[in-house]
Image 1 (cartoon, one colour):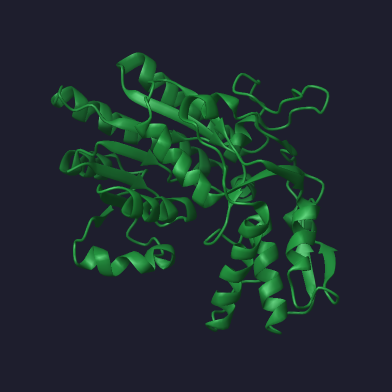
Image 2: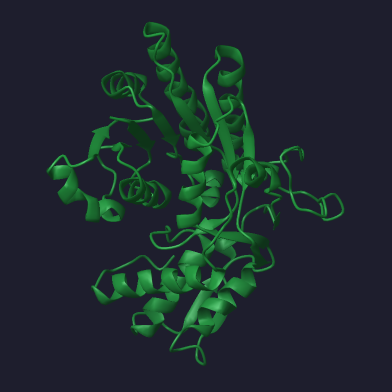
Length: 344
């Protein structure tokens, strides 16, 4: 039986990837999470997990080498999707050491666990996806941005400790491929969102606040940060399909790919789109919150994805409008269940 290992399965992307693999493959899926990881995003999978029906959870921590070695040696996964990370750029400004440790050294620990398993058993040859980020490109000046968008060979200029950590993650993936002959591929996924998106990210906090306003939980004011940043959006469900294609369509050790959607707009336009879907659209005010502004921002995140598309045939299929509708409905459902949230 083919086995896939997903680090960070309880996150937005990891949970959607598990859904995709269950629906579209016959693989067994092993999800790595910390003992304290919230299970909200995988609650619909817990009954299957309890019945040991193709989904299994294993406790490990990127900051604990022994736990990673134990999981890898127990499972010997055929495919590894390394998605776990400290993934919020804003938090990285106040917790840079934790971000660097988790994302750079954590990735190194996982790759070392896999390298050691391959050294012990020379027949073991897993395919490994290391998830970096478009944030590695950081602040590309407008006059330096290629007309076709940010391509793979654009220089890195990370604009946060998070982005620096993902630069290290990216380089580690390529190093282990080149130095040890491991089939590791790295992706720089641009903005991707949809249901289960964490409320610390701009489009999700907008949707959450709108849902809370509609329910009368907060005043009709949406608190915002930088609305001028330019973003290209993909749906998370298109993103996980891309990750599956990455590891199953002629995987090439050491390759690295930009992946992103096809809809580009300013963050302010995203906010206006979500507000236009609201029953309170005529009453909502927009208020800038200084605490939501980054010290510096990666503000021209427009990708050139031709390399990945040419290699795999992948194309995004879910329209931006559906993604935003589904994101808003996700938060409406949570609000309607009576959940209480921090107003962030």
